[in-house]
Image 1: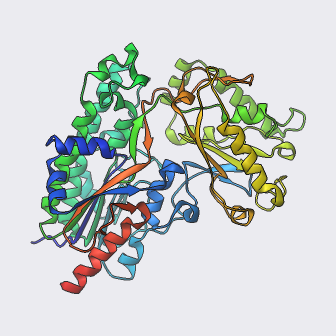
Image 2: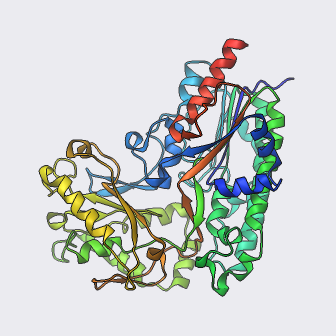
Image 3: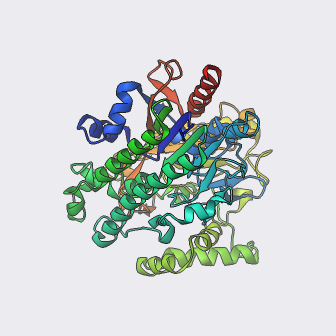
Length: 502
């Protein structure tokens, strides 16, 4: 029976455009090369400058980060004066109306952060070997597909969370590399079987293995970068392990294109890329305390719950790295997240805190304690813009002990206080210079000395992605750049065009 898939959209999560371009030109990603020859290559502009957590919700909803409000794994809740882990349940994916109003059959396979709708036809597969974990379990809809999928070998990520202590943890990195290669192959095979079995009008399949590997294997593609100069990176500098994973993804893309058929509109895309790093700067909360923007609550003024949280946080800070590693191996990721939530925001004295930092995995995020928005706000609305400007001036003036800049730029996300009052995003977003990532950092003019965190990560999110698409002339715009929030329009327009012509 001929497959009826009209649109095949394949996401390569966090694939770096420059690396993909290099491999295409070397003939090591032939499927993408053939697709480009039939169609077009575009730059994808995404909200990664806000936070990597914003990119997939933007694709899913077709709205920018200011509208959907998601910017990271943990988002600030002004009513409770605390953070909440993102669940995805508040998003409305663009394919909901396609399935329920237009009567199209939709297949969704591991789009990061997507909410499972329970569609009666097609398929919805969530966290089948995902990089980003929300529920901590695989969800399959319709339920009748569970037995079908059980016939496939489990993805390695379903059986174990693959991590490494650092760039010289050779045994764990080798195991991770093998798991990523196996996972890509198994994902491609299962996606192909699902498309043949359910014959969806639209199939969206995402490969997250490159995202996971990119955080650990970036020295293999940038061996001469100054960050990777010491001996810990010797083995990684001499391998091509990440390129091998890119090439395997390309092989699976080629097979999926064959399954979809020559008449299908095909688009392959990445919403953001990767670049070198060594950990994440972690001085922002202490900076705000030392400069008087924030104050901690005294022991006497804390509730018993706040005291327990403060004690737990202190124990975590002083726990040796080896014991921390054992702890994370011993508890589930869900339990670790629940315990982490209680210590990510210090016990502030909100009556004396004008601005404070939010937990992040990359950029710096600051929130103003604004009256009328935060439940315990103290900053008068008429002083909001002045407060933002003062903070930006301080941040952009930060220097390391040797005079190097620490902050490349500082974005203010609201143009005025009226906009800020409805703003879910951080008020200021700080993009760091490489000097801010150093293992031990002394900030000029201040007492604090700090170390970056997450130093096992050698690759970090970069702002731009890419799109390669072919199949329907006129669907892909002529402009060289397309916004991540507009990618769904290509899919919808291709489906509409095919409904009209067929």
